[in-house]
Image (tube, rainbow, N blue to C red; front, side):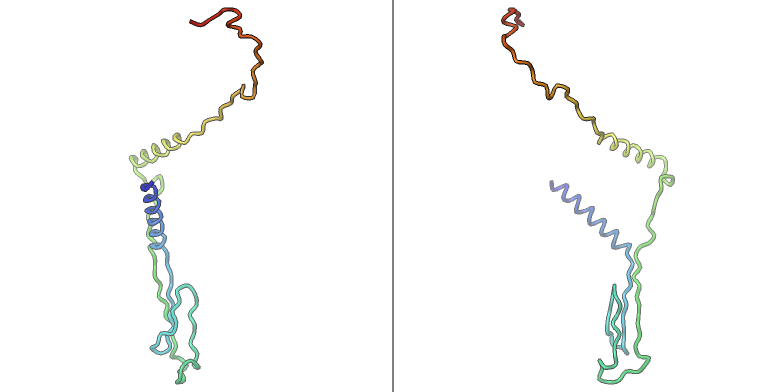
Length: 133
């Protein structure tokens, strides 16, 4: 039981790790002068207005910066042809063994399942005096 739970948790952790290492995203930052106003990861940044500050701002003092965090994009993808002969043999034998492991057997047909035997009026072995010794 513990082994199955540990196996499932580790496989989920590895899947999340692969997902997070390959995802790319952008971080947008909006500055007014040297003051950071807003940071957004998945949405749009809020722009500043001159009413928010006590001193009027110049026309060209606001700027936006976009930082792109790139994920891993050099994942190795193998095809069956790129594997060497030993790896191909192991893969084929693995698939073949597990394919035959879960073989579905035909449903057993019992022809006399719904048949009820006839009523016996006399014990035939005693009447004929035939006994198995």
